[in-house]
Amino acid sequence: MKRTGISDLPLHYGHPPEKLFKHMVDLTGAIIDIINSWYSPSEIIKRLSDPIWFQSLSLVTGFDWNSSGTTTSTLYALKEALKVSDTGICIAGGKGKDMTGTVREIEKNVQDKIVSDQDGLKLINFSKRIARADSNLLQDGYDLYIHSIFYRSHKDWTIIQQGIDKDGRMARRYQWHSSLADKILDDGRSGILSHERKDRVLDLTTSKSRDNRNGMIETVRDPLILRTVNNVRKNGQFKLDYFQEDLKFTSYDLHVNWENLRKIYEYQPSNFDELFMLKGVGKSAIRALSYISEVIMGKPPSYSDPLRYTFALGGKDGIPKPVNYEDYEVSIEFFKEILKSVNMSEINKREKLERLAQMSITFAPP
Figure 1: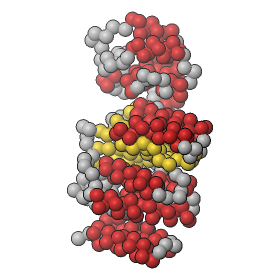
Figure 2 (figure 1 turned 180 degrees about the vertical axis):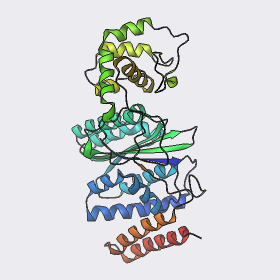
Figure 3 (figure 1 turned 180 degrees about the horizontal axis):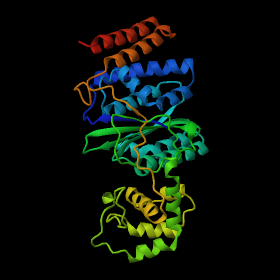
Figure 4 (figure 1 turned 120 degrees about the vertical axis):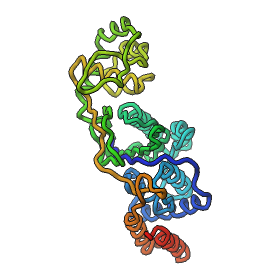
């Protein structure tokens, strides 16, 4: 699975002004039409998987600060714009309750013959696996609250997710593309972007954790796990959070659902894909099994935050840093040149260019 990036964003509540959102839908639609006419719908889907391009799209269409709302507003502007486009691109999911409707929306498109039965089943499978991967296999302190998938078939899709760290008041965005659909557990990323690197992150989506994952399978298939479940004494146990790299001890997490571990043993998963997709196997069970694999099998996972680049344009309120106006200008000029050369009515073109010109004035440094 190609996960092309992660961005950390300050957590802001509220909604963009209605007038601003209408402009976002309008300009987003124009940009989507340009890319579709010059390239293809697949190119649109591919670009949506690029966190820098996605962020630039949000900023150039008028969402003029770097926050958690960047993802939400841009996703919903895209959803409105794609409704009237001729790209054939579908979008399912969204924020909160819309996130839970992802499967239902894909199934509706299958019923309407927009995608085939086979496409629908595979898209749902990718959607579920990636949600589990970012939620349970990459334990970085963020809980998912946005999940959207753009798609034309099971071979052509992008998934965008966002997690929330309420304590740190930050959001982190995760983006995936279909070009490496078989790499979910083998560093299938072209970039991960964040404003900071976490000191200690459990990452089971990297090839560096392959031995640990194999040890987890050996563990749950061994009768030892059943004896452990039957004999474990919960009083006085420590949580796995107390585990440190230089101090290893065989204590168990108070919050592990030991009945679930019994069910995992009885199921006898044949590979890690089967294990992490089992019902009831959440963050706690994954952490416990990974820990047991390290302590008993001697096979540690990766505890490194899978970050390759840092990225933050800044915020209107100076958080996490002052706005980078040069980056704004690059994005604006890029789309301005595109709009100058595209084949659209002069009235519509002038309207878009005036909008971009106004943005250049608004964003110009004092």
